[in-house]
Amino acid sequence: MKRKVDLIILSDVHLGTYGCRAKELLQYLNSVQPKMLILNGDIIDIWQFKKSYFPKKHLSILKKFIDFAVKGTELIYITGNHDEMLRKFSDLRLGKIKLTNKEILQLDGKHAWIFHGDVFDASVQHSKWIARLGGVGYDLLIRLNNVINWCLMKMGREKYSLSKKIKNSVKKAVKYISDFENTASELAIEKGFDYVICGHIHQPQMRKITNKKGECMYLNSGDWIENLTALEYHKGKWTIFSYEENKDKLGLRKEEETAEMTLEELISSVTSLN
Image (tube, rainbow, N blue to C red; front, side, top):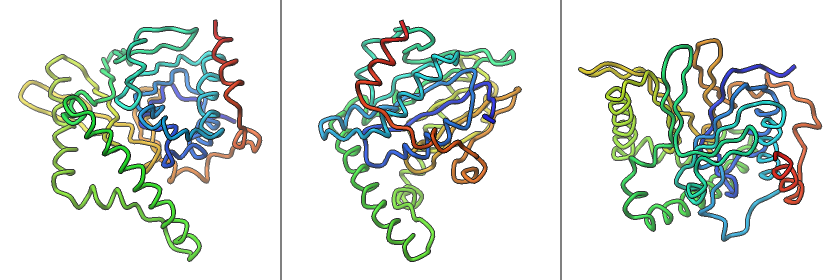
């Protein structure tokens, strides 16, 4: 039995990179039935396309998104910096699928402001080559981490995250995350929003921020490289779904979990929406 959810928000899946945890994401998607699904940026990592890495499991994720739309789920794709090439097609609609740069929702009488968050990142906005170089380095770090974790698992030990260790130990990284959250929240309060929802920094979070002008709830959906998290909104309540904490409870059908597809099948699915 699939779990019904009013709204699911995913970000930073980075399809097309070695670090993407497509198998786990597909397992999660096969376990839920959302009324609305928002993909909040960096779903497809177009920056990495030149290396020609896009396995069938990654195509199956895109097919799953389309299947949701075909079966009645409202699907909103918000562009990020790694899929910024899609911004030239902003406000495009294909059936139940909408492509946009930001989204404003009303949720049980409250207003939510949803965008990826790269607008706050100076390296992305003003020195894109630095950001791209950092993206390549991050992907190499994830590949190295995968090898280390394979060895640890063979020895019966727990997995270890190099990137998380680096982020948590570098004061500038910790300050950047804090500044990002505060800046987004302050702008949301000024604009009168109850919720501000971002991705981009790969840091799942849900906390209330208050200043002299008011308060709002800051939420971040995390990522599907390290944290494997999503935001869920159901019956007026927000939660952060963690794959690692719930993987034994998903109870999926085997054929859904292992389903794969070809590029031709994906193109056929997209064209059928019209």
